[in-house]
Structures are given as structure tokens and as C-alpha cells.
Length: 437
Ligand code: PMP
Image (cartoon, rainbow, N blue to C red):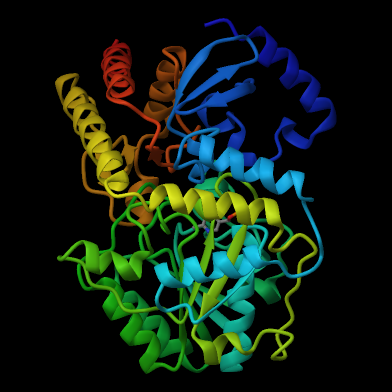
């Protein structure tokens, strides 16, 4: 595939934008370097780059684009919002409508607040938990990514890990010492941490279904145990559902139990949302129990504000996106495509003697180049990054766009079709064949 225009733009970008990219996860550093592909148009499940090459998109912009690119219902909502003025600095009816929609889908959220990114949402849940408990430390899980605020950049999963900087520079030791990191899916490790630092722990923060070291499901009973241990210790439970909310079904992990009988989870005190709920525009939201949320200004002493928060464009896109997702059968269709694709890829890897572990949850899955299971960060780290890079390049050459990191997931959208899956399976088979040689 010829990509001279991407290469040209990348060299210009390097002159003006630090590292040439506006988010490090877009860099090709972990997959052999060179110019990332500059896209110029996206429609449905497809991308066109600046050299007019066409790709099937499984990146879905790292999760948000669940209805495919430029979905007519979402686009119409954004255009309507733009025509009415994009930012007022006053409350609007749209915010009330959307808050009610989110509350209906996430029963533990008595009260909601809109912000502009997942990072902001998570950062604020921590502040609120600290204000409520009057404690300072949090426990997080190795490899879970919670945005780029100071406290959660310790052992921080996909983006930083891909570039070999799990613990960011620029974070003072006085802040880093306020976060305790334990392995995911290991209740004993959590129990030990709580025994040691219990009186200081404001919150236990978790991606209840992990999306940042591949897709990793909690073991049966794990979330119940986590919630029980945290509560017994007087700590709050924060679910970071920036990836998982509305990804696998209409709702969050706490309502997953109702949809899938072998899975039980307890309600968190606070939930952080982002990505999908913005329908492709910038958004974040956090919410939780009334008595906890009443810590937030103007009701309480924990301050959080935002010039852009709740802007009519993002809220309109979010409402339209959830309306599409609310149609019957939408998630079943994505899951059916993902099951065929993930199953076919696993089968193809086996045929070509390439060790591969595929973790699929609904319409999303991850591909780790290793033989054993992947249930925590350590196992994900041990997977073969060079094999992944070869696979990534071989797929890109065949017009299949994945995230340039062994830790990121493949996301299906409502726009993918059986023809896309057939094409991708053929490409994967050729990619595995090329990797053997
Ligand atoms: N939490 C999780 C679980 C995420 O995956 C991400 C982004 N990948 C964030 C928080 C941060 O969201 P944002 O990039 O919108 O700030």
C-alpha cells in the first residue's frame, strides 16, 4: 500500500505537534515506528486515508464510535445542535433529558454531573470520594487505565504501558504514595492492601470489566468480593466504566448481571463514564449515590466545574447515540459479528501454529500473542509484542485498521457487516501465514 501523503504529513506534524500526534496511543512507536496513517474520511465501518486507501475500522476511536462513523441519526443531532448555537454557559433542557437517560440505565446513579472527558470524570470521582470519606489514599489495579490525571498514572495500563512508561514522570512522590496498586482478579492481594492501609483508603477504583490490558472479565464473584472488602473497610467503590458502559449491552457492569445470569456485581458508590455516551463528541460524566454526590459544589465542599461541560453538541450526540443503541437487537447483532470474527481469528491462528489468546466480551475482543489465559496485567504484559507488531502491520497492509498496541481491543460497531468480517478473516489468515515465514 502506498502511503506517501501520510508520510509527508507526519514529517510536517513532527515539526509542529509534539511527537507528531495529539495522543501518544496514536503513535506507531510500539509497532516498529514510522508514520501513523493519516485518515481523511470515515463512514460507517470504513476509513479512507490521505492516499485514498480504504480500511475496515476496528479501532472505533478507542471505543466511542459504536454506531459507526457519521451515523445519520447522530450526525443530524449534531447539525441541529450546531445550528442552535454550540455553547451557552447556561443550563439547557437537553442536559436534563440526558441525565435522566443515564440514570435510567445506571441505577446506582442518583445524581449525575457532565464533564468533558473520561479523565475528568475519573479525577473528580476520586476527589468526591476523598471529600466524603475524609481519607486520602486510593487502591487501583495494575494495568487499569483511568485517564491522565496525576493520581491514576501509576501502573497505568494500555497507553503508557505500550510506550514503556507505566509510571509517568512529572508526578511528585507525595502524590504517587497516595495510590496503592494491586493485581486484578486477586482478592487476597486486595485484602492484604486493605489490612495494611485500610484507615487511609478513600476508594477502591476499578475497571469492572477491563478494557486496557486487552478485554478481561472479572472472575465470577470477584466484583462482589471487591465491593464487600471495600465497604467493610469504610471505603467507597468507584467503577470506571469509560470503556465498558454501553459497550456490551445497554447499561453498565452493574446491570450486566441482569443481562447475563452467571455474572453478579454489586452497585458502586460512584461511576465514571465517557467515550460512547458522547456519540463521538467530547464528553465525560460521573454520578453516584445522592449522599456521596452531595459533596459536589454548589451543594458541597468538593469543587468541580467546566466551561464546556454539558455543551449542547456533545449532549445531543450522546442522546442520539443512546437512542440508536436502545433499539432491540442492536447488541445481539454486534455480538454475533464479534463471535464469528474472534472465533475465526483464533481458529486461523491455530491453523498457522501462532499462539494466540482471544478474550471476547460481547462485541469487543482482544488478541494477545501468547499461549495461556490472560486474566491480569502480568499475563497481558508477557504476551509477544513483536508478534503483535508483525500482525498489526500485515493487517494494515491489507486494509484492516487496528489500534497500534498489544493492549488495546478490537471494537465492533452497528455499521460492520458480514462482508467486513469475511474480508477481515481472509486478511488475518494471510497475516498469520506471513508471520510464519
Ligand atoms: N478510563 C478508562 C477506562 C479509559 O479507557 C480511558 C481512555 N482510554 C479513560 C478513563 C480516559 O478517558 P479520556 O481519554 O476521555 O480522558
